[in-house]
Amino acid sequence: ASLEVKPNPVSREFRVKTGEKISAVEMYDTGGRVLPLQSTPISAGEWNIWLSGNPPAGVYYLRVLFENGSSASHQVMKF
Image (cartoon, rainbow, N blue to C red; front, side):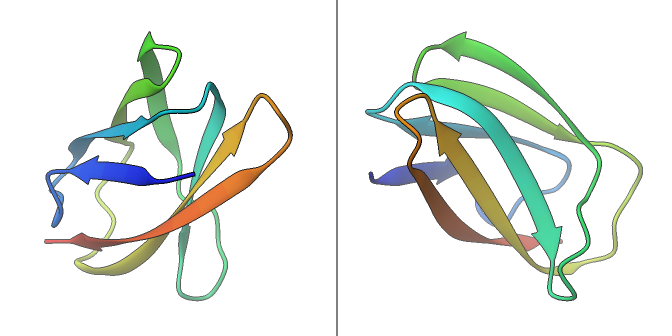
């Protein structure tokens, strides 16, 4: 599935959009640690994401899980 992440680079809030039905969104740092975040569905394939806390600037990996059991990843830059 294709993912659209806007804006990218992100500050603390961004939007994930895809043609699939999203079931969960996770974000990891380069060491594989999960970042705390809050997510709010706008529609089945579009969610608003807020990073909790204030992670440092750098590269992170967004993993989107879909209702059909598949997943997709996307690199995200945090400034």
